[in-house]
Length: 427
Image (cartoon, rainbow, N blue to C red; front, side, top):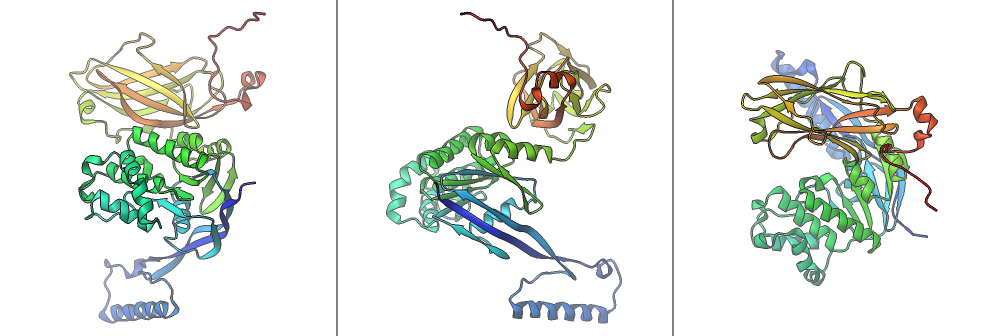
């Protein structure tokens, strides 16, 4: 049985945060004696904090904020654990404690092996040093011997694809080059535990694919442990063997990846009936031709839920430029991060003409047979070559069960029902 690479027991982390009292705001008149009294009280409080070894906090009122509360779980050696949750749930605080960046308020952690962390772009890099120098610097910070770094040096440079800029100070690197080099160092210097935050979102699609392949390789063939934090559920499902869901600083659920992703998706806030996308900025080239303003369910649906087998109908408001005569549209459906269906007007030989100004289109999928569950509707518009993506997972919606779904036992399945197929016995 595999040993525990990480053990976390009753881990808590709290911070003191200050608030300025509204009654002492600069907009209100105060006498000099009030100012002096306030400053004396603040100085006395800060002096007391220094004497007691406590955190010094600015503000008239002090509040204790609990970032983590009684967190306990373990991670097996060679396991890839996905850590998911909404912003502010405590994920990054946990990783900073595991990386020894900050100390816990109470509880304990046990780490069996060296830890390499990639929590933000350029972690451990010095901007004035070159890429070559930073590889050795960052490797030393991670506890690697000089000979060990030299042995892996060529692999790191090839993976990061920065050969041309290897002797250039990293302050001149783009954010993508930064993260490529930082990840390459962390992944190739063979730590027993690799901790990766959402930082991979900076890289392009091809590099993200390389990173995921490398993490899969180090966990499966190298037997190393990976903690992976991401809001991309498709990546979590592909990479992770198990997951943990955080909610308001506590562990809400631990289990197999699919159940964790489903719980995370169901915990997301409900979508307003009319989704305003006018503030989503398209590329400069596409903005000259058309712009998506809003999306809403058709009156027959009322909200973003529809029974299995019933019509799914949406209305899109699109503003077209005077020179634009027609547009193209592609709508895709995703569940748990995987795309299960796509519709394009070109495939159905439907031409969508527009007039200058605001145009409203209604797209109806008759008898939509997506099986019950949580889905996302992705919206892509075209005006000429290529498509402009308006958030790949723009609209969350739900397919709810119906008598027809119950009749075929669809509640325990997922994806789409393929109707256009035949089956016959041939023996």
